[in-house]
Image (cartoon, rainbow, N blue to C red; front, side):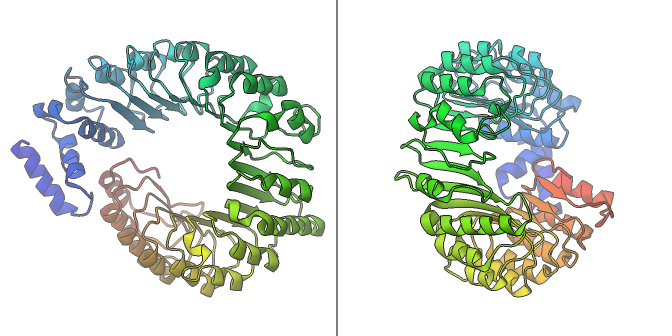
Length: 531
């Protein structure tokens, strides 16, 4: 390293000693501000991190940065290119990085609005070793972007959110070994795209993720053909597919027409499909995601969920009406499922006005493997919640807990803060009992916490938020309507270099932070912080 870079590193360490957690990243921060000739000799990992830092802090447009990134030897040993939510990444930048490099194995571009079809063509040209192609939320791309994609080892393709793509024929025709394909929200595709998937990928296709089967003109025929031509398809998303409004048929009859029970599926997503009589599932099924309303036929549902190889169940229970009958049915169904297959439930989301005490008790006692719990209701038994999070109980193994808006007692909040030691994602919006003491205990016990949402908790101030910043590896924090000040932002800037998202201002403009504090936070984090 040159003397100027060493001096810059020393200065950064004095100004912000805990800004970054490794010498590597600290050095790269300095390099991004002091590019020198020796930069072309950095390793692939260092160059990738350097590019991410430059993109996150809007340095790629700097003339000096452009001159060095354009050097033939800079991109020579790159095997991975990853950029996220950057409007500085252009076609010319991608062309410069890969003009002399044909060794890429992974390309990941997410929400980079300046990139066009020509940029993707230059990026993927002659990349025969490419294994992963991820182009998500790239709204300007069309099917012309894939004319140069011809890789011998391409296995994973993710085009989620590319709404202008109307055909996959060229992409799949030249890359027939793709085994994992994700096309969620690619609403420009029609029935023909799925016939192309079946024809070109066939037995190689293992995982297909998509969420718009219900928008196809002939959904039942299309998916039946897909299942026949892709015998090794083991994971499939059928979100909103068996909806009663699709063809006017009863959803269960549509399932029978598709012969889903004859497939070789191991994982299926049936979220937002509501069945009166639950359909037969493949005997090979191991994981399932379902939506319930309380109006289902309980025996057929329990029978389906009791399949011998089924080990993981994710449930969304939503009572569509606030009537007493709907509420009773939802609680009754929940209790029955917890008693019958509670050990298989890994994720549970509930939206009801009132969760009965018996139902909540069964959740706390009969779901030993529950990892993700979301509860949207007003009334719930605080004593059961308090008991659930005793040290060593099932609640201590939760990774996600979202109970916003509930009337939770101070004692129950303390129990959660002490006992939920495995939490990574916590949401407690608009809770009157939430304050700095609870946050301080959370910070002491929940050392894996990366996402916290305390929007609307007006008793939360700098004291509790600073404790979280010092002890937890925060990536997302939501503090609208709290008593936070600039001191919180300075603590986040100092202790949370991996912060990616902060939400801090509501319609009341509370809290209000200074421009200086926001700027310090933006410059201190490795990635660009989305505010």
